[in-house]
Amino acid sequence: MGQFDFTPGNHPFRNRNALLDDYTPDEMVGRDNELEEYHGALKPAINGSQPDNIFLYGKTGVGKTAATNFLLARLENASVEHDITIHTKIINCDGLNTSYRVAVELVNTFLSNDSISETGHSRSSVYEKMWDALDALGGLFVIVLDEIDHLQDDSLLYQLSRARENHNLTNARVSVVGISNDLSFRDRLSPKVRSSLCERSINFPAYDADGLSEVLAQRQSLAFRNDTVETDVIPLCAAYGAQESGDARKALDLLLKAGDVAHDANADLVRAEHVRHGRELIQREEITRGILGLNSHERILLYALATFEAAEETPTRSRDLYERYERFVEQTGTDVLTSRWMHDHLDELEMLGLVTIEKRNEGSTGGQYKTAGLNQDLESVLNALEETIADVGVHSTIAG
Image 1: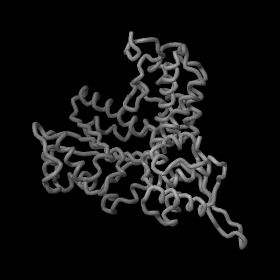
Image 2: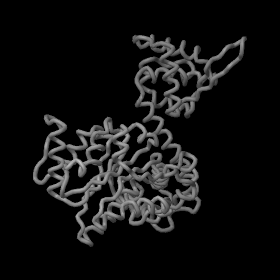
Image 3: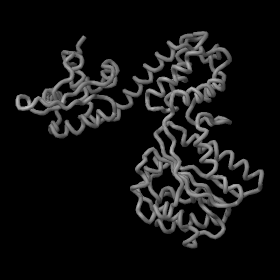
Image 4: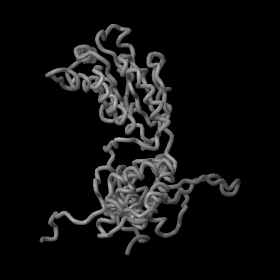
């Protein structure tokens, strides 16, 4: 067989898909209290009543969307069993970030045998088509707006929450479920929308190590063959996940990467060493993605800091960093930005976890100033800055 043939072979996975983001298990673990509260909020639907609007809050990867998929699937099955008309729709507002675009999506989901384009209509006409589509089907609509904090306006929230009161709907009722990572999102809504929503709020706290262990153990049983994962793998993945903000997605990604590393190494078992190697690979990938999202000046600034790091001269004073940034930009033939710009963007790089910033005060002799240091592996940063280094030139601190 050729070197690049695709042939089945020994590997630790039974169902690798069970570790992916879009997988919803038949049972959900580690969120008993939140599921109980969420289930109670949705329960009136199966009796033909309209549930309260519901808002779910919590950081990324704490189970908000997974819990929604899990409960809505059960609600839909129960509605068929008990002959109750319930329609559900989940919309991610990261891609559809205006009331107009979300309304078009709802029209095209529920309008029978027809669809409308995203342009060429007034918002009022789109809303009218939306009401017609919902009323034609009738029953209860549970509309989930995931990442609702990406919505640029709250017109649709007001319209949906007042649809019956404003006589826009007669045969249908609508309940809204909003999912947000931003705990302050509700405060940014207009007073009339906050008054109209009358929502129930459910908070999803970050997972601790025990909660993550439950999630990982369940997925391990689904994803891996029997006796292919050593006993210390799940606790180690859970510990890393709890340490890194309690994000179940990251913990699952780490277990997946460990399985892939073991597979690539033709190992008979997934071991702790594969978890550690997988974590290093994931961190490098995250660094690369973060750096590729920077603009050219931010990359040059990061490269300048990396050269100080390579020379073991960090933390370095911001004025020294700016001088090197200036030289690097001049070598590319573009215009240098101000030191104020640099200070602002150093703060942004710190928020991204790429650098560390300290404020120093040496009193009357030295005054106040900032120092900066690299917060990631130097080699990974330099690899991600390969194009920038080619444009600027190889500095003596990293040559050879």
